[in-house]
Image 1 (cartoon, rainbow, N blue to C red):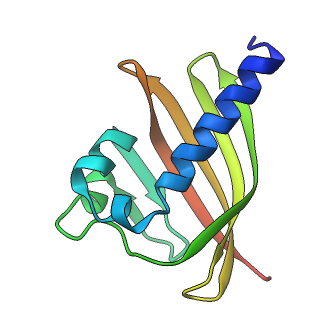
Image 2: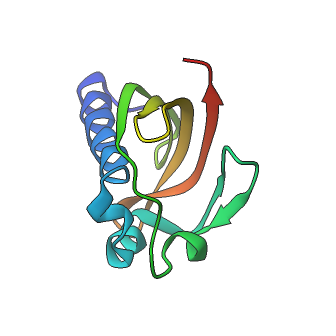
Length: 122
């Protein structure tokens, strides 16, 4: 089991990765998305659609919005798999979402394997 200081450092690091995925320059740069998303990545979108890595890393990347992440936490599933949970305020669409991601330690780095966003009442 990770010790408290290691868990704290991992929480901080994964929060930084989640925040990077909200940044417009990352969301529209296929090379950056390629690094952050696992090859078998998939997402259950709030629209009800399922997206895969190929859908996110295309020409235009992910949609660009002004988003703020808060209430971030991690839940260790194993030594190399972590569930992150948090909330996002989407200021572009005036929505709040509950979010969760599964991160795996693959090839010496953390990559997102799964993501889900659920719209909530603000």
